[in-house]
Picture: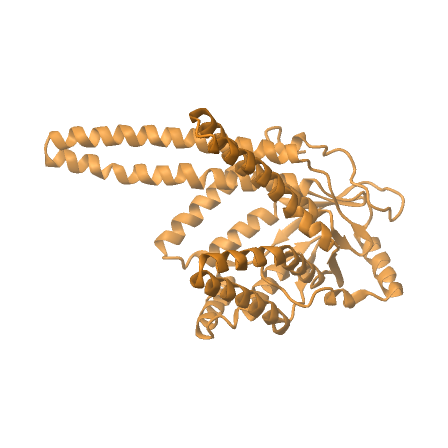
Length: 401
């Protein structure tokens, strides 16, 4: 069970997620996920990818991405079997070039005139949900476990509704806010400004929740389809706790900066030596501020959201559970940031491996049927239905979203 201070513990963890039944229920078997990647191995892949991408002016990016995904997938073992990625970099190049062309058109239009830039931006945002859906289809269709391809079955209509509803809600509140500001009354201006800020801050977690629900309730493996049981309230609780943590740390950091600043002024009046000593104290204070404002809230919300999202993803025969603790996440984040600064970014592949290991190995799969039976039945079903590898053609491009 999850710790009592974990937000995901308050969600309906005990209730089964039901989508189909492959046989009579059996005792739940826990299968941990193991990640065997090595920082030194990935460094060689990363540096070659970086150099070739620079030399080819970005055209090597799809090949670099395939090499990266195959390494990470090949070192992710689920119940003793590794994942595999089958994406074709030549087909991925089409998506990369299309995305580059869209961005180029937007930049050219923006330089031509603000109106043209605004129109280009609206066009780009209009096709964004379709691009995102195509990317998820391609990624899942080219991912396999024990020879079976995964699928993403989210509809195009739902992809647009994921973002359209939060945008419309926020636009409505913004309209009211502008109307209040237009009264030119001080109370109306303050109320309108606060309403727009609250609408923006509320729209972000709502859009995140809708996207995760769209994403996690449309994963398919053979005849199994996942459901997503988290609620918007669960997401809001985590966001509010993160916001409170950030505000508290920010206040503490501001007080400390004020104390050090006052000491520096006093020190300057007491001579150059005391002034220099006081100024030297400002550097660790600035480091503390950076840690307080960025390094603590980010791993906190990442760990809590991972636990919530994955623990509430699954079906009756197979479900996930995440137990990623904040302490190890914070420690690894601080180590990664520190070493990347001192190595001028060369520690990046080692940091990526360490973070992937921490996050993946916090997740386990709980199955109510034997996985060998599951795979054999799914293979037989797929063979009879004649789909199999044809799932890889669900979407022909990957946009790297």
